[in-house]
Amino acid sequence: MSLSHRACILISCPDRPGIVATVSGFLFERGANIVQLDQYSTHPDEGTYFMRLEFDADWVNGDRAAIEREFAEKVAAKYQMDWRFAYADRIKRMAIFVSREDHCLLELLWQWRWGDLRAEIPLVISNHEILRETVESFGIPYHCLPVTKENKLEQERKALALLQEAKVDFIVLARYMQILTPQFLEHYPNRIINIHHSFLPAFVGGKPYEQAYQRGVKIIGATAHYVTEELDAGPIIEQDVARVDHRNDVAQLKAIGRTIERTVLARAVRWHIEDRILVYGNKTIVFAG
Image (tube, rainbow, N blue to C red; front, side):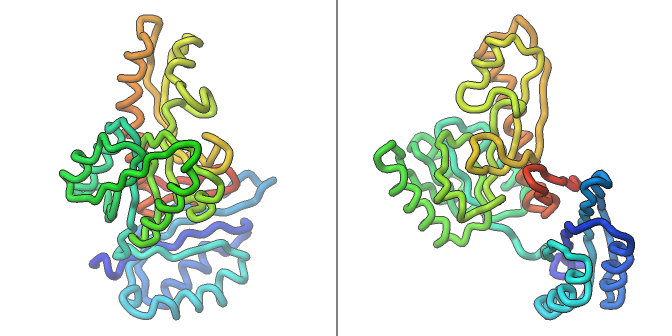
């Protein structure tokens, strides 16, 4: 089937018997063919069930709203579901925020150019001019909004106006070295992805490689997470690590870390684009493909 007939449904709800049968039965009765089903249930003391079900159906190219209303009334209400349908032909619009370093930015742009990230990138926003030529070489508009302590709120208002005009669905902070205010974050809950250059919760805040060097760690890593008001403490999407030893100085740690950062961020972004992530409290359930 074409992408216009492909969709998935993401569900979280109290765990109880009959959820899979009811959801799959609802889809079967409407001519859907299930192509993938992932599920997970938490510890019985918590009792929460998660599902990602991907399917093909002719009606996906028709009256989607009517089917969603039916699902809400006949299935979701019965099981107290938090749910949403996601449609494969609906391409998400991604804004990238960046400062001076280009490794995470370039990984995203390369994967986007190769077709590995099925998204539109209507703009890149930076607080420096340094990466304008790089971004514009990909045919993407570049907006420089320098940030100081005095103008931070005004620059965030300008950024929000640009994002809203471009109808951006989510934001990626590709080593954007500014802390976003709560007023900004409230516009994109669980839709801002950051890459932090350490294996959280270790070494939060600034200069994590310097902190790691001072502690003499044997493993360094990177963490992609959704941004919340608490610095570097949002729901973790993806992490990876590399072994290091006493011979590695700070510059070498940073060089090793750059490779980890760019791959971890790209994976997290792809999973978000493909609707493979469910946020649960301050955790994520990731049905990675």
